[in-house]
Length: 361
Image (cartoon, rainbow, N blue to C red; front, side, top):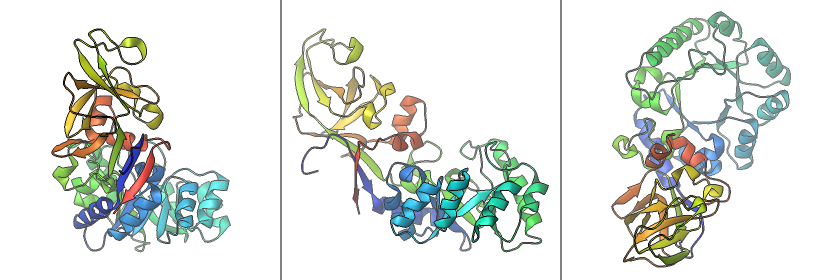
């Protein structure tokens, strides 16, 4: 960056495009890639992610809300959009008005959508996620009105290799698809998320719905590079102050860290107000001038403090990388997630609007 910014997320649209090309390589010629761009494209920017994904070979997009579908339409996106979340009646009207497909699992939902005219529905069978959908296969089959263009399910444990639940879900959905296609061979069947797309080709059906992998985040919470995925987001700030600490001097609320010896401490203007979680206090590194430096003291709303060592080789104005690479060193969202006991999705989704996003090709 030409001038320091307190909190900047750099989005590599080319990486999103290449990740989609990589995902397409896993699919047969008759299987469509649906890129999931809900939650503002997992924090990457929905319109940016949508355009890059479509360039990379995605044929559909998926979101969670009617408002998200409307946002994509206003951004000029014309391709098919699937709204996967629960909708109130006004939201259902908005989704249909945006030309989006919607998910249904009850006679009431189907009737409400039919009354609007022009609705395209996907019946959801709950094979074991336990959230939305019907568990009753007979009810699901009874919902297959002319407005229904697809059937779907959602895997709960595709990212847990070797479990028994994923195969059981896949078997149940496969049987359901075979039954409904006896009368409706035109139906689009889809089930796989990113993890299932990598794990089991039999789960691909007519379409896969990939979210996290589109952004170069590993669906198994491991190293995305091992799956030829490229992280598309890096998070940067800058060294705003550099001060010498004497033994016993403290940094941050609660004085939870005190200097054991003479050292220098850098103040970096990013904090939990930007989505850099307080749980990372004293348990995270950043990169400055290609080296890892530990965060010390409590993460506050607007600042973190970093131990620069007794003989610092950095200056005010230096770029600080919180997620991303500097030289051979890198900090992945997966590493940050492990330190917090969570998943990589939450790290990028949790970046607040105060973090400016800039897109690079």
